[in-house]
Amino acid sequence: MAHFLANTTVQYVCACGIMNPLTKLFFCRHCLALRCDFCLCHEVDSHFCYNCVENIPSTEAKLKKYKCSSCFDCPSCQHTLSARATNVTVPRKGDEEAPKEDAKQPAVITRKMYYLACLACRWTSRDVGIPDQTVATGSWPESEYANATRFALLMEHFQAVVLRDKQERQDYLRRKSPKQHKYPSLTDRTGLTVSMIRRQMGWSDKTPPKAKPIDVNPSVATEEVDQLPDSIFTEPVNLRELTTIKQKLSQPAGQPSCVRDLFPQHKSLSIKRSLRCRQCEHNVIKPEFNPSSIKYRIQLFASHHVPEIRIVALPEKLEGGVGVKIQLKFSNPTIHDMTVALKELPSTDEETAIIEEMKKVAVSSTPSSLNASLSRQVSLTEEPRFVNKGTTAKVELPEMPFVLPHRDDSAEFDEEMQLPREDPKFVVWRRANRACIELSCEPQDNLAPGAEVIIGFTVQYSYVNTVQVPEKKDPQTHNLTARVYINCGKLSGEQ
Ligand SMILES: [Zn+2]
Ligand SMILES: [Zn+2]
Ligand SMILES: [Zn+2]
Ligand SMILES: [Zn+2]
Image 1 (cartoon, protein in one colour):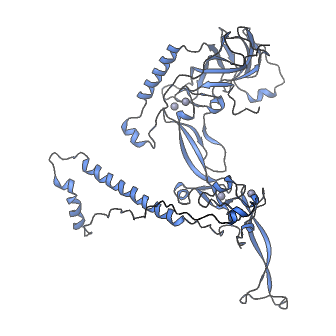
Image 2 (spheres, rainbow, N blue to C red; image 1 turned 90 degrees about the horizontal axis):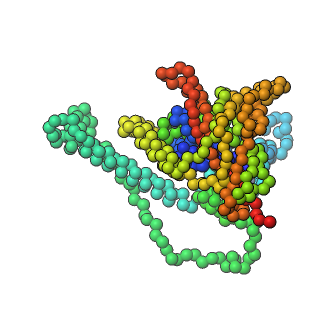
Image 3 (cartoon, protein in one colour; image 1 turned 45 degrees about the vertical axis):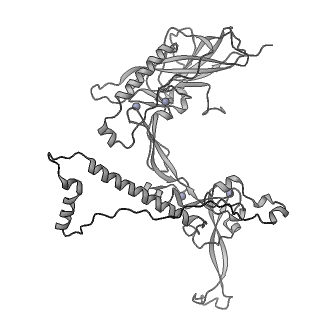
């Protein structure tokens, strides 16, 4: 099970021709096709901090540089820091009234003070001399960086440049836009009417001022660099005092080289991401908005819709030109019975035809210009391609289809034995919604020892689509196909 999620033994071909394990694929119920990461549009739904589980609106998140203002990461090990409380005795100030009964006691009082500590590596904010705070959250000092002002200036400058470009483009488009009048009018182009209207309304005649970028001095390279201090050649290096690369890069603004300069870092925000099919623009994955929820409103994982294939038994020895038996388990994840048939992989000509067909669909379903301007993002569909894997073994596929019963979670606990079905010979056993089938395969006899033995076939399965179609009330049954490549292991070496 070590490779449960990164399994590349059984791979499915996405509609675009890229291979992935079933766990990494999605299924679009509107296009009735497999979709991989490249065939989906990734959109940020919301920003949140996973430590304090606070939802942060995207404009606010941008202002805060996508950092949580109340949670900190340990600068030493990147674990989350927690606030610890201690009692500290501090001298009483003159204006603080002492209780009458202990007026004779020394002029000190105990106060609750807070510091940040890492429970993983025991780093504390006291290690680097950050003073304890009287409240647990919100008042921690911000570290200052040498180049902060320079970066702020640069940012301001480029924001103004972007704004000016935008204004100029808008002006240009206004002048270029087609006129509604039959006759050319000077006022349209010169903005004369606007200025007249403004004057009539008693407003100032000026057009809004154009954004002017503030000047920044360009950086200049210099050859004069400070000499290294003498101590660097004489004193032994104490590695305990130097930061690691990881610690340095976790503070990109400061990049301290000494551990005494490490500073608590604000926690980066996480995002909730929704995935949209690039072809039909329907959502394939849509998480719930609440940051503490891990559920989905829409979840179309391929493993919930496509029959899953696992290897049950492989022969001990694989030899070129020698026929062997392999056993595969098929399971039906849907709540409808499924008829499965195994077919040959398409030939090169057929694959070319499939790709041509896909390209046509992509062109015809591209949203019109009106829709394109309304949609948030112009979709680029992934170019269909040939599968970059060849089979190295011949497999004898059964001619008859077989039925996989629907998934029934309670059936797992039933004691009653299932009624035996009339099954074709190649079905070895079946249990609930799973069936194990036996296939004979023969590795090519020109394979070198140690070469991978790969078989491939097309799985044709019946799929009941529960998406409501306005014209037809009953759920529609479709015959869908998925191309599967299975790595059966390496060819045995010669002995
Ligand atoms: Zn794809
Ligand atoms: Zn937080
Ligand atoms: Zn730590
Ligand atoms: Zn779709």
